[in-house]
Image 1 (tube, rainbow, N blue to C red):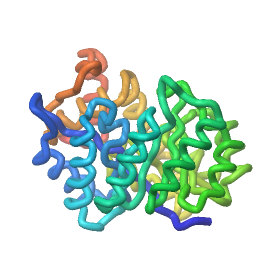
Image 2 (cartoon, rainbow, N blue to C red):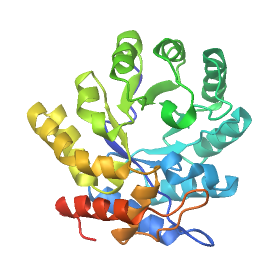
Image 3 (cartoon, rainbow, N blue to C red):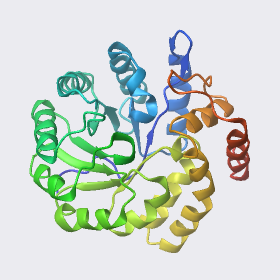
Image 4 (cartoon, rainbow, N blue to C red):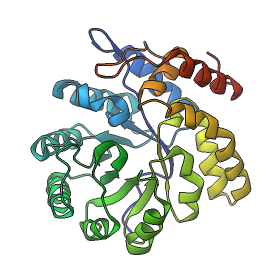
Length: 295
């Protein structure tokens, strides 16, 4: 097994913005909030961070800022994926140079790829990276499914260390563990399936939910790893209504609404993302308050 990047929860952070650009003061406060609440790792400029609509300069600057703010207290994982391999290579080399501890690379979207193309894509990224690479499979968003047989081939690369698996298909998850779970770490990319994936041997979750409730999220994985499976399962069920609200509209629309309501940023989204519908917003806020979070 390759060295584990983190164990527990990593927050796929929203990117605070204003109408004129990234709000770095807000980002600093949000990073501090995450660290103060015991988060195990942070993801900068993942897809939850609106990577698709940040400029190349903004993407690199947010990663650099996050690394500088965290100062090694937890691993910083840089989102470097796009649907253009050459761009991914550039973002990956830059993130490594700027001190990221690992890179998270989503499968190419829209142009997708065959499984052969995915092998070539990820091999090219891993070849230029001097930090561990986390594969990211989220076919509902990309139209591209990274299959277990393909992951098994990629797991032989010395720098491909983990996968964020968000297919939502537990049969595929079981097949993934069967074929390569002893050679690559598996992180849940589904906040509603964390405990089931931990039970299969997962190392944690790269999470949207922990933007809002980092302490409760970490408590779930802490309980599991301490052997309190029933306690972890109870927290999974307790947090499920929040998870459902966070994904009732396209991510990160609800997550940014939540973080804004908590006072950490403006609720500014870049088009084509639009503000949350009022009825969904009301349900989201209700579930957040039930968990003791002040809005």
